[in-house]
Image 1 (cartoon, rainbow, N blue to C red):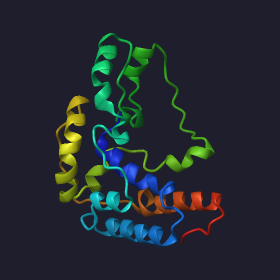
Image 2: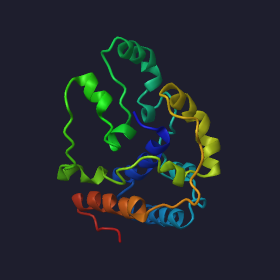
Image 3: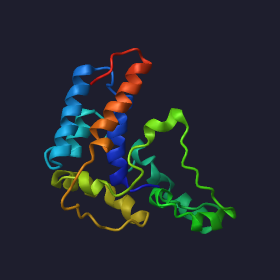
Length: 193
């Protein structure tokens, strides 16, 4: 599982790969908004970016959460029976495999090579970046939606933003431009510069 606040940022950015990538005007507008957010993180909210992409809103019964709330009781039961293990994305990124290795009874080899066809998914190799992205509007909008998940899966009720907040273009507009152009190239469309 993954902190839904980080998941939201990744979701919004990665959706450019398969959503409206062929609409050059829209792509240029989106890239301008992302560049504006890089310069001033408060100037563009995630709510606005999500709305512009016409994405399904995150809700406990949406695909965003993989309908996790419907599985909670069954998951709790299998975990308590020792048949399942909850592994957090944050532990994966930080290479904290000890508990997972104990559960599986094997040592995990860390292989940082990603097959070429999946390289587009690599963005920051980090977590907690939502603290640079969220605005006050985002906090008001997403906190009630995400709080049940955060509580259920043991994430701290900590909504403090970084000060100062900085968004690296390599993890934002440059990344989105790269994945859009990869998709556009595959469809024989002109790259967006």
